[in-house]
Image (cartoon, rainbow, N blue to C red; front, side, top):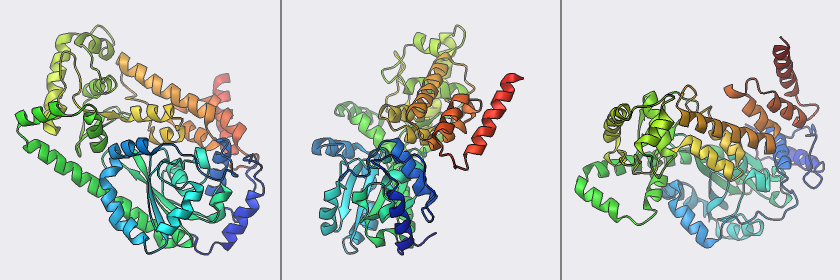
Length: 448
């Protein structure tokens, strides 16, 4: 790895490249010697999002009350003591800031050196601000989320000129059970923020926090299992409205459907592979939180006319599987309904698309929803997720996003995606040859 604590060559290259920026227009990705390729590609994405390099500060995405409510329910709230012990407390003596953001790049916690915090307020590096690539361009939090891996950004490598006095290191935080992207952990400051050991430090902290999150889930599951059923039911009934949503967010009860014929179900830190039919049933119930009658579920589940007797037998078997994971997860009947929040990965994709975060949606998307399922409801869900993702990538995606989508099995023969990528790729990009070859292959197959 390049030693970013000696940044003079990097800074000269980045400043030279910044001269090519014209109000955020950066169409040709100039070949500036010494400018790292990942920075060049991030600047291209930033320009595609119409991020303005001359904006003096990041926008505030949440006011105080919204922020307090949102982060109290965020799954990373439970691991903040680990982040505080390993990163925040030491940062008070080292002239650094520690930030934790959500999966779309909004900062939820910012702490560390008090004088540095006051300086950072000038560029709105504060809790509640949006530091995604789409908003501020290249920065460690936003670019780490875009790439799905740890990254260091030094000085003038930032897209916004107001951030040039700063350097930062950031690592994405993934759910230890489902693999879903939950957020990002960042260290920001001067040259020490991009020292060679800093990336390893943040990666180790994230790993420790993931382990702690898993331990807390196991402890919660054990406590729930030890609670008498009657008392557990009473406590559940006494919960305030919305408490179920908080519990679901905290323990990340999740269902992995994308690119798999058999779903993986994770509840309270326990994971099990489901049969194909049980995968379909839970997929449908998780996307219909108000429940489905037996007749409605049969229509969505069976390609031909389904039997309610067959459905009841499947539900008996499914209840036995769920009983072993968590008795509180057993579906209710009349209508069939899940008693806890179960987050399907396809639901995360749709949520990101609704917020305009197609890059994160593409990061989560591992393929079509239960690709071999012939259940009518699953086919509709599969088509909805796939078509909305394709539309978002075609409408707002960078060349990198288009090429990443083109690598999916469902896009193997997608001429439109490849033509769109070719239009966005710079004339001298080495990636153009492969795209042209793919288009020639597809056109030859169409002629045959």
